[in-house]
Image (cartoon, rainbow, N blue to C red):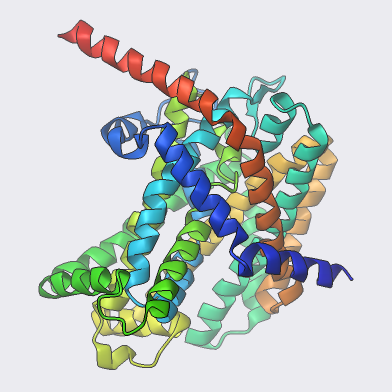
Amino acid sequence: MIKEIINNVNSILWEKNILVAMLIGMALYASYRTKFMQIRLFGQIIKTLKGENTNGEGMSSLEAFYLGTACRVGAGNIAGVVAAISIGGPGALFWMWIVALLGASTSFVESVLAVIYREKSKDGSYKGGTPWIIKNRLKKKWLGVAYSISSLLCYIGVIQVMSNSVTESIVGAYKLNSNIIGAVLSGLVALTIFGKGKKDRIVAALNKIVPVMAITYLGVVLYILITNVTGIPEVFMRIFSAAFGLNQFAGGALGGVIMQGVRRGLFSNEAGSGNGNYAAALADVDDPVKQGMVQSLSVFVDTLIICSATAFVILLADGVAVEGLSGMVLFQEALKNHIGWIGAPFTVVILFFFSFSTILGVTFYGRNALHFISENSNVNVLYQIVVIIMVYIGAVEQNLVVWSLADFGLGLMTVLNLVAISPLVGEAVTYLEKYEEKIKEKINIKI
């Protein structure tokens, strides 16, 4: 019965592209209302990304950026891109870029609202996210609880998918026992979650993991680009010609290319789902607009940089070496074609970093979602123990029913989040206009 309900809801929201239409509509509307702030104010967005916080105790904008990026950047940035290119061809990447450019405005709006309607805890820290927007602005706490429950369902599924991705890559490369891998991975998660320290252990860990994994991955991709520099113009030609169907024989093929790029782009950067709101609300910033800008940058990093890096690894590989391949095997063989035998272990390492950071990120988000439902600390401890168990279970077996919970939860989250923020876009725009006036005043004073 429950399985049928989950499958039916997923079919309506995902297979019939209901969510795609809602997310694209919201992205276009937010871009129009903000006058495409993600492009106009890109220089200001970069300046806003600072590591300092106002009192030295709360979470900084940079830490919130790492947290948001950790959840967006995961195994999907490899597997999802590989799938998009395998099914939709190189043109799918172009439409992923377009979705990221538009979706950044959605992320800006929802993050600004998350900061506006957050609450302050007794210890001086913040708590917030879409549930708090719904409770404090729309005055419908029950709907906020529904969103929180949807979050938890999604995260349980995501945790298992990520842990299984790590196991698959290691077993595929080195034939190790999945039980051992599961025990080690769940042990690392447990040490991180329950370890002691002045700052939250998850936040502290992500402060180290996210920069390292990004620099490591992009460093290898940069080497590949440099050693294949003469092939880059041809790759861009393939991307743009395929994106507009110039090398397609039927209009239906073009529609498939666009849909693959749009869907993968939307699902990768998560703009509109409200996920990033949990991180944005915790940032110790003096203006909601600043954190909105930081979270919009996270969308750019996810799609325009990380996803593009994966695509170029594949598209620059020798066609003969990767002919007929798909999935992670395609990515791994493409890497081996570029950097030799080290491509296999590198795939394992980078996939571990991507998956592990996502597990930590959604665990942190889940704690906040649960905190909205119940402030009992014992409930949160129980949740974290469940997370560790789910990491192990996901590592040793593929539970497709639990995995479908990720799509089910994410789908419900997205619908509830868009319903909540759509009528409030004007409020975010008002804050943006005031912020831009402050910038102009500072420039005039300097002049």
